[in-house]
Amino acid sequence: MSVELDATLAAPAAEALATAATAAPVSGPAPDATATATSPGRPGERAAPALGPGVRLAHFEIVRPLGAGGMGEVYLATDLALDRPVALKVLPAAVARDRGRRDRMVREARAQARLNHPHVAHIYYIGEDLGHLFFAMEYVDGETLAQRLERGPVPPEEALELARMAALGLREAHRHGFTHRDVKPSNLMIDRHGVVKVMDFGLVTDALTGAAASDGDDDSTAVAASALVGTPLYMAPEQGQGRAVDHRADIYALGATLHHLIAGAPPFAGGSAAELLSLHESGARVPLPAGRGRRIAGLADAVIARMMAKRLVDRPTTYDQVIAELDAANPTRSRPAGFVVRTVASTVDLLLCAVLGVPIGMLNAGDGNLSIPIMFLLVLPLLISRLGTTLGKALFDLAVVGHHGAPVGFGRAAVRYLVMVGPLAAAVTLETVAGLADLTVLERTAEVLVGLGFLYPLLELARVSLTTADARPLWDRVARTRIGYRVRGRAAAGERAGAGGDLPSRPSARGA
Image (cartoon, rainbow, N blue to C red; front, side, top):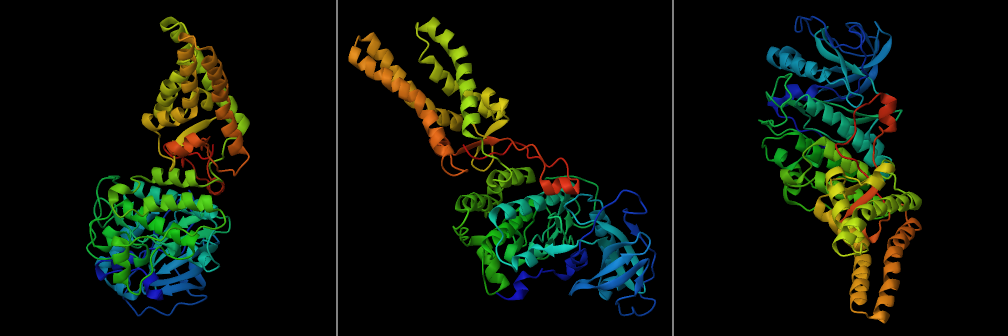
């Protein structure tokens, strides 16, 4: 595939936006240390001199070039005031000479500077010196995901965690009303601690104004793009058609990036941008290859399918949902509950149903045996549909969720327990009928079946515990549910970076 297809498409109308950062920044509190600053400059008074090692722009001294493209050059520089490395993004001369484009770029850079988050590259300074318009940004000592992919595919667990950190950064941008519009591996960097930074907000557009940044936070307003911008390899169908886009276009691009990380190749291959855009609109994505970690890759593929849904209504509507689904598919984030814990939790639930069911059964029919499984089918599904857990599971911080981390409704929860206690309920019913009909042999047979009905869940849990860590018992497979420890902690990388408040809206779990 030609290299051009991995390049950002930027029409002249969006060119000023397309220069906002390819290197990464670090944030800090004091105004003199981390606040975005601007220097007064009078560009155009003289020809801009060539840049290289030793050249100073304001109080930044260039050390060496980091990269260059049609929308500017990036240099490693030293902040002489604070004695720290920074990345300088020097914009093209055409932008510096155009007052309108320069002012718009400064507004957008100031807007990005408001994003103070561990997974977003921060802008420190906006300046004009020696005829150059530039930004000083956090320097990330690491590599982009595109560079990481040069060494081959990324293991599913690692790829899911990388995508999760990117989702946290994009969520913060969305909370400030921004749509990135160019999410791709080369715009996501990993530092030496494994922390992902969302880079290059050059195509970012404010959701309220479509151009200049605003303090608004309206999640419902889409960006009306006047020109095709983005990268064809990862571009959402609606973006490729030039239609209005919102954060769901970024979710699509993040899903395409996740596919690339795990598969080692983009989701679609084409010889031209037009062909790629057509494939994103109507082509069928090839599922992730089955190999080592086949089960985890399958779960990741299901998440990618949701994120890359052709129709907007079929994609996750919030980043919280994306994060919850990524967590549910990642075994490093959703520990499976062990045999002993699940057995004790089920025993507590059984006792709860007995306490509620036996008295009711004895009052109505003189026999409370049948009321216990009936209570299983009524009380426990109701608790799961309302709270996501039951009394027994809550004692061990367990939760029941859907296959992709979504909440479980009453119907699916009832199916789950029907498969679990259905044989027991049938055996108890048979025993009751045989007793009423005075059929001794049938009654004794039913008593044996009742015992087997009690043993069946325990044997099934034991079978699952002796197989793979992510195996599920029959009732969870039929109902498409999962059970595991609720995700309450932060990502290790997020903790190192000081991230907080990154929990999904509902617990995500797996196993059992």
